[in-house]
Image 1 (cartoon, rainbow, N blue to C red):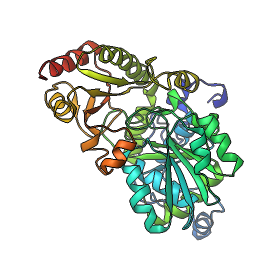
Image 2 (cartoon, rainbow, N blue to C red):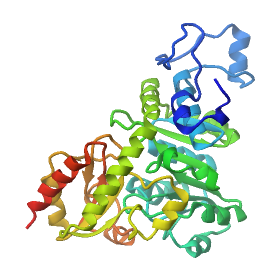
Image 3 (cartoon, helix red, strand yellow):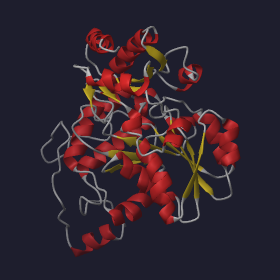
Length: 396
């Protein structure tokens, strides 16, 4: 194939990381649904285990289908290497356990997924790792939270569910003055909308379950970063804890990548129209969407993103009961705990995705009782609006 550096995003989404394999010439990436691989001889086996040669040993350690997925996402993110892993949470956990040890600290954005918040506040302290949370848009807050034990700055941009943006370049510059690694969960944006490594981040994480897969049919994650760090992750934490991604799921994610840019364009277009419609709705208190001029980080979004994404959150007038009633009356939208699907998905974060947070922590994170998170799909936008409209009409 032509030098990958000369190719555009859409072309790389289809071709990066794979040439037709020599045995059959298969144009599509094969699914190597095998546990293990035959060695040439005893010496070859010993060389592979000693990492003196590249090759396949056991699918828990590596797999040719997974390798294509890893390479393709790494290329799209502008990174050196990738590591496919069993879920987004497994990707976060492995990254943290690779970079940190007991006594180290994390500084994290307060606006993050509830599962990540629980990992940082409940699980990691058992291993002697503490986290300080800061407001995502306060550069002084990020700097003030750093101590001599801080080893990671962790953020989502946009954050889940309030869609707060972080100035990744500015925060990375602060972190690197103290030799701190910056880890960015880029799940909401995907590499199509933003590439945090180009803004100074050191590691990018995805829940591939979301937009990368795009069809709500497989769980997985991926880590992208420097080749030496990814190699260390694979040979130590990944090898020891065993969070391998199945080849079948990698193959499904590869299919998702091939249409990523097409889907993201439709997600963004639909979300912009729906956000503008919601902003004018009399039963909506407020709307957060980076594409709206009313969003506090609208200008930052224009600077560090290609478009504004497919996620919206809004506050229903009437609080908890009104929010529940709205959700209970949608017909086209699906009530479930996922995002980034081709279908439009709706959920109430305070009682589901962020219920692990105490009421006080929910308040600090801006998660109110009437908050609704909407993952806008690729259906006809008129149909999505019609569904929301009839659900709003049933509110008192």
